[in-house]
Structures are given as C-alpha cells and as structure tokens.
Length: 275
Image 1 (cartoon, rainbow, N blue to C red):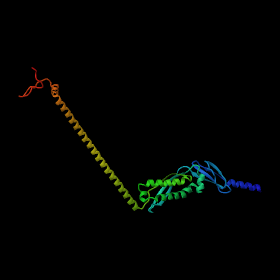
Image 2 (spheres, rainbow, N blue to C red):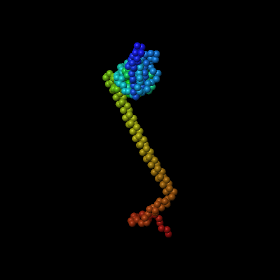
Image 3 (cartoon, rainbow, N blue to C red):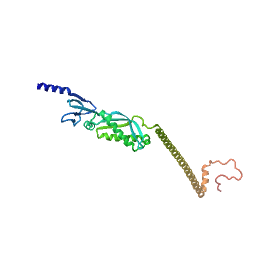
Image 4 (cartoon, one colour):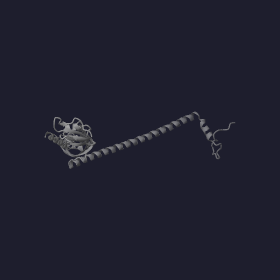
C-alpha cells in the first residue's frame, strides 16, 4: 500500500508539474510558491524550456521595446488649472533584471504597465507642472516640459530594472477652449511683434549699408579729385621750371607740315631760323 501511495504521489507531482518556455527577447524569473525556498530565484532564467514543479511559477519580462498607450493623464499647473493630455511610452526590461523587477513589484510586466507606470507618470507630470503656468506648458516651452517629465520617469524606473526609451504626446494638450483661444491670440501677438522687430532691424541694416556705400563712393571721389589736383600741381610746377618742355612736346607731336592758312599776326610755329 505504501508503494502504491508513493507511486500515486509521484504521478500526481508529474501531472501538476509542467514545461514552460522563456522565448527569445524575454528575461524570466522562477518563483517558488511554497516551502523553505519560497520566493524569487536569485538569478535570471535564460532563454529556453524550463521544467517547473507544482509549486513554481515563471514570470516573463520583455527586453525588446514596447509601445504603450498610457491614455489621458490629468495634472495641474502652478495656478491649479487642470490640464489633460494623452500620453504614449516606449519601454523595455533590462536584460538580467527579472529578479529585481519581481522583487520590486511582485507582478508581471503587463500588470506593472497597467498599474505602476501610470501612477509614476501622473506624479512626474504634477511635480513638473507645479512650477509652470498653463501658458508655459501649452506654448513654446511644451517640448522642454515633456523632456523634464520624461527625465523624471526614466530616473524612477532605471533603478528598478526598466528602461524608458521615450515618453511622448499621443494628441493635443487639453485646456478649456477659452484658455486655448486666449493663449493662441497671445502667442500670435508675440510672433507678430517679433516679426515687426525683425523687419525694423532689417530696414536699419539696409539703411546702414546704403550709408556705408554712399560714404565709400564719396571717399573714392574725394581721393580721385585729390589725385588729379596733385597731378596738375606737379605738372604745373614742372612746366614753370622747364618752359621748353611745352615746345618740346609740340615738336614731338608736329607732323612737319606748316599751316596752310595763317592769319595776320600768327607766329610761325615752334622755332625761328637762326642767322
């Protein structure tokens, strides 16, 4: 009878035991549910088939990127205005982090994503938005605001075995319509003011350029006039000192022919004939 009972017990254990698999792209951990060894296995379970006893359970965590739709997250700015925005997230488990993940959360990855991740994101949004106005969040600082939230979320999960690749908007930031209209008008006015300032700066720059060009032309003309005056002075002084130069120049240019017609009193050109 004892043998029969022992065989029956072994058969029962074999039936209740099973074979599980750690697929590629996952990290796993085996949890002992009963006995003196109950708890989490101290090491990661590698990829492959695992034979589990009746009191063991395998938990899997994906090490490849997963895109998660978190849904609408509601938070408040520093003035207490409620803001809502749809959020998406890309995350994965660190290789070798399965024991840490289960010891921290005691849940599967799906449960962590459904319960813990939204809580951490809401807290990060509220803490970051508490220092900003709705205008700063909705307007030109929106990208920086989201990066600050992402940094808080990433730092929180990094020490717990989860890598946050990105946190992003899945739609528009939700504000009351009147607030959005007022903010858009203010942003538009600011943009127009900046545009006018740029246009004025361009006009001033073009005027400065024209003045510089005119000054350059004036300086060039003055220099040319000064050069011509100095040239005339030099030539005049040379002629005063050397009166024969005029006749010499004329002789060099003369073609050797006397004028056909000469009026009364006209001198014979150039030089006289010696006696």
